[in-house]
Image 1 (cartoon, rainbow, N blue to C red):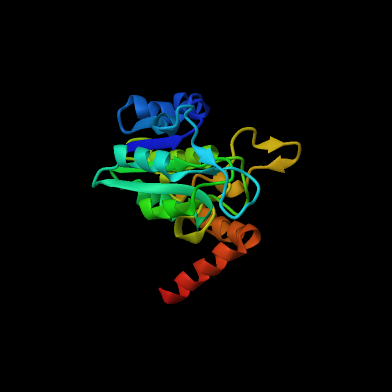
Image 2: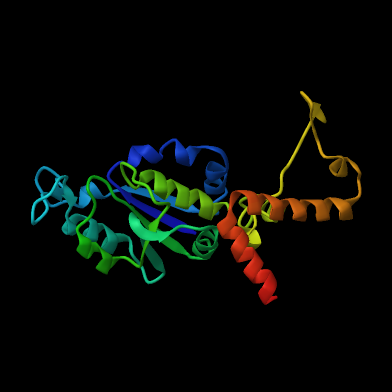
Length: 229
């Protein structure tokens, strides 16, 4: 897989791409990540990429010529171009799984007051990571990258992906380690029993219980699937 990031702040990705599973996945050549400062495509003598908005209003808007030129430079017939924006569809695990099957992602990290609205004519999809506003699209872009590459074949142990949160619209089951008793809080006896059938049933029950308690929206989806089955 190849991922191309278009941003005005490429140094924000330096540490992110050189740590933990992200670094290992890149080193193992499972994914190639290019971080591009799209300011270099500006034709302005001062490399300016933004301007005032028509009709008045606060904040500067990223103009079309520079970012569109960058998209055209890196886009191929196998590319999927994604704009990170609070106005997009909310990101989900299902979307991460879908994107992990693509050959080339182009992720556009916005900044300032946003992009000229006509940019939507040059992208395939607009994605939001949630109903809140950040300073720019760099952190949302990192979230997309990490959630996608961990799903790539051999990126992490396949068993680690089994029964994760959001699988079948359920949260993950609770996990425990040593010590067995910590300040009166004990590991459930069933996990110490060695009975794998009982443990599997317990974990499934806990997934349902946790989802019902913390994510009623997911729980309702789970119930609908159970009824339909």
